[in-house]
Each structure stands twice: as structure tokens, then as C-alpha cells.
Amino acid sequence: MIMTDQNAENDDEVQCHYEVLGVSLDADNETIKKAHRKMALRFHPDKNLGNPDEAQDKFRRVQEAYECLSDAFERKWHVIFDILFKIVYLPYKAYVI
Image (cartoon, rainbow, N blue to C red):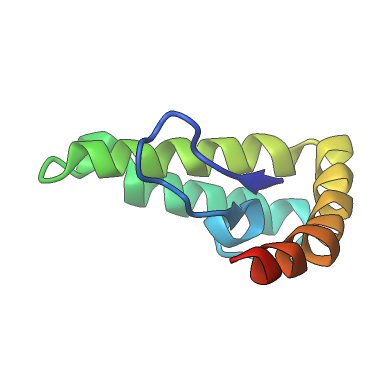
């Protein structure tokens, strides 16, 4: 659900899979599939020779988002976890920082 890149050194960005694909939470499977194809073509490393590292990272995020949202079980879990994340973690993070 919530994406964090544990392999990158300076990547503290938390981004929802729906945000990565640019679709709404109530998007159907066909909309998610179309958004994935569009984003995968946009960020494919072979099409972004000027900045291949950034393109590869974005392409990987798009692939991870689609893998999660294309599976019905994972998609439901993602929505539930997203709600819990917004209720529990975000207020805590705002308080601590």
C-alpha cells in the first residue's frame, strides 16, 4: 500500500500506489491497467536515456503499484492499510516532528 524505498539513501517520500498510477481510490481494474501502461511507457528506462537512474526508480514504483492493485486481495488490504496509516501514523508524525 504505502510505498517507501528502503534501498534509496535519501528517499523519505511516502506515496500511495493509487498516487503512483494517478488513479482514484474507486478506479476499476480496466482504469488501473490503462494507467499502468501509460505510466510504464512514460518512465521506461529505455525511453529516458537522459536520466536512467530516476526513470528506473519511477518505473519500478509503477510496476510495484500495479502488482499490488491488480490483485483483488492486495488491493483490499491496501485500502484498509491506507485508512489506518492516515488515522494512526500521520497524526503521530505531525506531533513528534
